[in-house]
Every structure is written in C-alpha cells, then in structure tokens.
Amino acid sequence: MKRLIAALAATTCLTAPALADDEKIVVGFATAETGFMQAYDKPAQDAAMIRIAEINAAGGLLGKQIEVVNADTKTDRAEGAKAGLSVIDAGADMVVVSCDYDFGSPAALAAESAGLPSFFLCAESIKAGIQGVGPNSFSASVLAAVQGATMAEWAYTKKEARTFYRLLDTWTEYNKGICDGFDWMLPRLADATLAGEDTFLNEDASIAAQITRIKALPEEPDAIMLCTMMPGAVSAIKQIRAAGINSMILNGSGVDGSYWLSAVPDLSNFFVPVQGSIYGDDPNPEVTAFNAKYKEATGGDPSTQYVYPGYVMIDVWAKAVERAGTVETSAVVAELEKMTGEPTLFGPRTFTSEIHHQNQARYLIVETNAGKPGVVDEWTISEAIPVADLMK
Image (cartoon, rainbow, N blue to C red; front, top):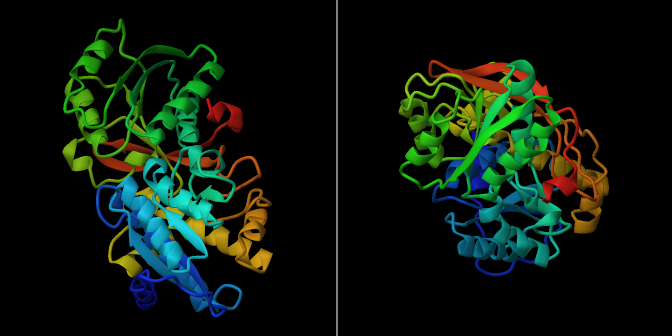
C-alpha cells in the first residue's frame, strides 16, 4: 500500500499539455500542499490516494490504471485558479479541489470551463457544486447546514436544550452554513428559543465583548451554537470557558480532532458531528479497519473526520465511471445523479440534478469530556433541508 501511494504521489503535473492516453485515467489534485488549508486537504487527499491505490491494485478503472497529477494552490485563491489550469493541462479527466468553497472554487471553475467534472474534497457550502460552480461540480462531504441542524435537533431532543445562543464567525461560507442550518432547524423545535446572537471574525484575538453579552443574559443558555473553524475556533472556545461559561458548546465538523485540545485543558461539554470516528470507537468496524489502513499508508492516525470524504469521493466517482463505461463528463455526471442512498464506507450518498451535495445525513455525535473526545450518540435530522432554504 505504501509503495502504491508513494508512486501515485510522485506523479506530478506536466509543464506542457498532455495528449489523450487510452491506457490511463488521470485524476488531477489542485489542492493545498502549503498554507493552513493543507490541514484539511492533505488528510482527505491521503484517503483518496488509498482508494485509488485499491482500485489500481484490483485491475484499475475500466481496465486502466489511475494516475495522479498535482498542483499546489498554496491556500490562495489566485494560485488555486492556476493550479486548476495546471492539472487540466496535464491531462486530468477529473479535477479534485480544496476542502473549502472559497479556496477550492477557483480550480473548480477552471474545470467547469474546460468541460470537466470536479469534486471538492470536503467543502460543505451549497455553493460547492451546481449552485456556485456549475452542473459538473460535486462535493464529497455533507453540507455545513446539515451539521448545524443536526446539532440543534440532537441537543434539543437528547440533551433537553431549550435556550440557545448563536455565535457566528463570519470568515467563511462554511461557518455561515453551520448557522444557516441551525437557523432553519430552531423554529421547528417546539419551545426552543434563541437567547441571543452575535458575530466575530476568525482572526479576532479577543471576543471579550461577545462574552460579556452572553454573561449579561438573565440565565446562562443551555447551548451555544458556535459556527466557526480552525484556527480561530481554539481561541474562541478557550475564552468562553475561561470566562466561566459552562453551557454546552455545539460546533460543526471543522473542529473535530484531538490535535488542538491541549490548548483548552480539560475541555468538557463540547459536541461536534462527524461522518466517522477517528478515535477507535466507530460503531462500524470497517471504519476502524480503514483507520488502521490509513496509518499504514501514511505513518500516522487520521487527525480529523475530514480524512473520510476523500475516500468517498474517489469511490463514488469510480462507480459512476464504471457504470458509464467512460470518463466523458456528461455520462459520468448522469450516473452520479442516479445515486440514491449509494452505500459507502462512511454512510450513503445521494446526488440529483438539483443538488450535488448531501442535505440530510447520519452523523455520529462526538463529545469531549475532560479533554477526551469520543462517540456518544448518532443522529439524522428528521427531514432533508430544501435547496431553496439552503440558498437563502
């Protein structure tokens, strides 16, 4: 496995346009090899390489080996567009782009202009697909809005939370999506109320003003819906707890992982939704087996649940190619859009001509207690979020 992945990783994009090759299928990764987005892109890309290696070892796709070409977006939007063009020039049949819509869309738009399918590694904005890029673009993950809706409904139902405080980091579409899902779900929860709401920026060194407003409430809210991501999430969480606020903190999947927990010693009453558990306690033993395979291939354990969408992406795309009998874009897209509850290692996937994302999904709920995260429950929102509501 390590040799197969190393061989794939060593294949880099060419400086001149590649000619069509009937002996191979090319996947182009226009993703972040440097900058903060590397922390999200690399784990998912490593998982994608594992699935590619498995397919190649089993005889390939349509009887051809999958080869990989790479270009570094450097966590920069302008460089992202260049990276997309680079892998297209190198012969990519499908373009893989960064986890986040804001940073992945320039490369995805380059693929759309070239008439090629693209997959965001794990972007969770409705814009990461038809609505923001075009009809040939997909995401391998689950919408951020589903995360916010999941945490609201789960906390209400299982933890009897009735008062919520909404704290939005306005930095990215992902963060806004979490709160959008929360906003959609809250009115559907009888006697649940919004005690207050506020905003901040990921780069803010202090959220003292926001904390003061929370502490000024007549009663501490049952739950704080914190819509943020790394790197600013750590500072916000640390400040909330240092201020003596003990409310449940609910967040999206962007803060999954134990790598940051030493910065908030003994953190408790903190909950996130995940597609699969990196902590060795996933109820599906096949996920635990995958985690071991990931460690064998990369030398380290998965650091976040964002490993998993990369594997799913290659899995569903390869199934579509096999069913279409070609890598031709319209045929592959048509097969993807036929997938309804398509089984994958990390839960079923559905794509339609209206949405190339997941607007309802089963999530595991991970609680961090005394600094230790682990799965405590699972939840699927009671209804799918309509596309019209996702676009508000």
